[in-house]
Image 1: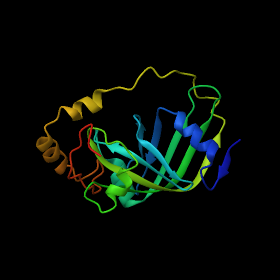
Image 2 (image 1 turned 90 degrees about the horizontal axis):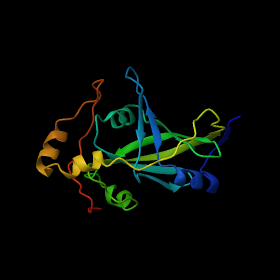
Image 3 (image 1 turned 30 degrees about the vertical axis):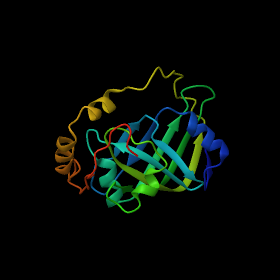
Length: 187
């Protein structure tokens, strides 16, 4: 049976901290539903009703487009170890880009990763936990370095030029590209 709460508590925070992967789902009117897995050390609980995650450039920018158009977001964490549990965060989010005034304050919670393009700032509406008994037991071996390596090897000017042209989602919704290129050590 599912349990709902209006905010994250210490037990939720501890569970989130143990998970090496989370999933993000968004949707906008007349657009595809977007569902993406996320890894790396990219998720932060900023308060009982506020979370954020660092977003790296990848195959598209659907989450950005959907949050600008609609705002709704669901984040799901699954325990792949024992005990079984699923935790969902339902909320409203917005992209914060390096060129935005609030970037520095929000970015201070993260270590920038190569290819960082934005941070999604999310207000928590509700938290749901459920059994997770149907989720398989698996072990994490390691993070994939491929995405970070590809961004790390990119020429900064070429990366910015390439991302500057990505101003539409796959459904034609507007997106705003980042105007800053990050390496491993920038913050």
